[in-house]
Length: 114
Image 1: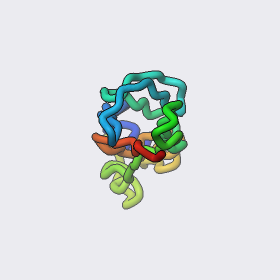
Image 2: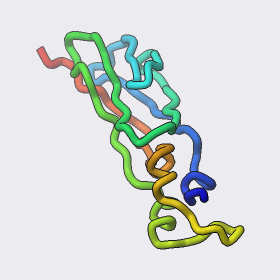
Image 3: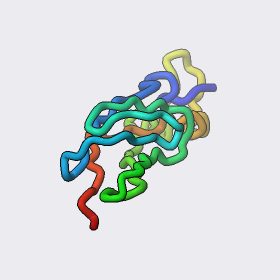
């Protein structure tokens, strides 16, 4: 059994990140991926844990959670839509592998806190 979001959804999404004060620094996703701010980072959908961005810049929030929403494919799954092969879909699988989520495209890390 596979969920609609599992079969039709994207495996990853690109997130554009910048600082509110236009500072440049390194940041780290909760999965350990290091990237430069400002810049793009790939969020790989592997589970339903919230994606967080961690920074060591003392002028910025140390942790920012990436906003997400439930994907349209997951909604179809909940409504009981079956796959094209006629196999019932599984919302639980979409939850476990993280495909039930769509993440925002852009994120601003709040800085100038001091």
